[in-house]
Length: 228
Image (cartoon, rainbow, N blue to C red; front, side, top):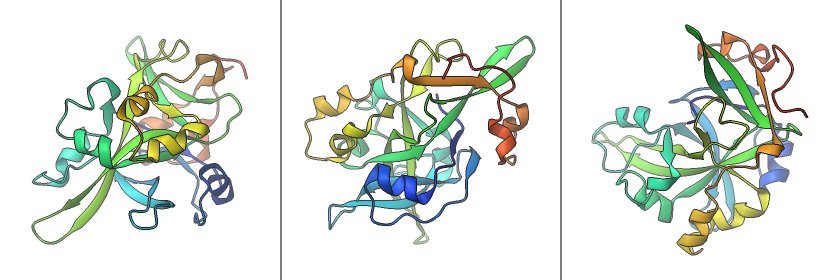
């Protein structure tokens, strides 16, 4: 699964990676948690170009009675997207990219759980495969929200968890956002990222508290499990 992640890349880096016209200079985020605003790249409905926006993390289906359901829908399993009413329509009509440069996973160590930071060996930013939805409340309020798709863990992440978020290669961004792309081609993208490209190391238990959003969260406690 993916319950916390990081995004410390500059606006210039994100503009280049996602081929965007405008990206604000975001504050670095070292401990992004569910229900918080997250950066999202999607296709503009009218102009059909990529746009940057912020959405609440935790997908709220359009038919939901209240936004609380989003707390349980921060992740969507790739294998069952077409079976789940909360994700079926979004898979076909509302796919998005969720910028990140790392995520956290926890490993049981006796009576405690040791957090690890997981990212790419070159520390560059990347994109999670995501889905988004638009929700409107009875009082006229409106909210856009998103979820991160997960798949089976690769060999590097397996020691921590049996699931990992889907990380898309840059060359796959266009297909993932293209709502006219054949569904079988889209589903083929939802696979584990190559283990040899990943970097993993233990970090402080500071990340256990969502309020701790500072650089110390990503400082290594020891040597990486996967050498850079």
